[in-house]
Image (cartoon, rainbow, N blue to C red; front, top):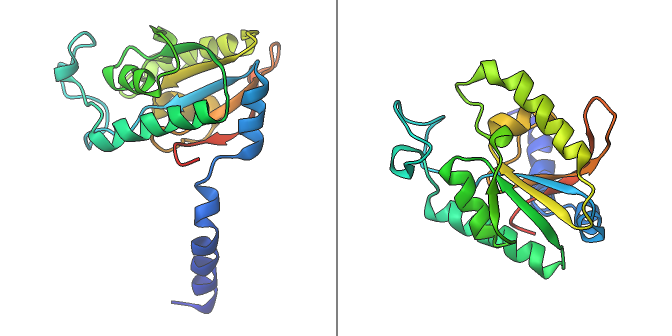
Length: 191
């Protein structure tokens, strides 16, 4: 190992705990209301996509949350409540793992939103779906926070980066812009 590699690993080890903590500015922004938080579902059984022949209306045919993913979702919900963040509306992908994440965050009734559905294995849907989601985020004008629970395959083309499980981005709606929003920061279950 070179000297520079050792220094780099040392710096990463020193700053890793801070990088895993919630962005305080993002939490403050959410508390002020009028923003969107887009979250990747919690940890699932290993793999990518879903088994062949899966059905949206049959959770047994899909990859689902494991207990660690359930706990991540509960922790994120506790963090939001402890910080006094008002979730005005909760939207979720139709996939069971996203809906379960949204329910375990426990911020209110969960509605499904097809434009937040998983894009893995569905590349023909990507452009139109991401465009529609940008418009929906940009149009949010509620007093509280809009929480959208989705998949990494949706967040990556939307934000250009992929959060970890049960982690998400705080977005400031920016209607009329190409992106539809500005990324304020990242929040995860660890707080």
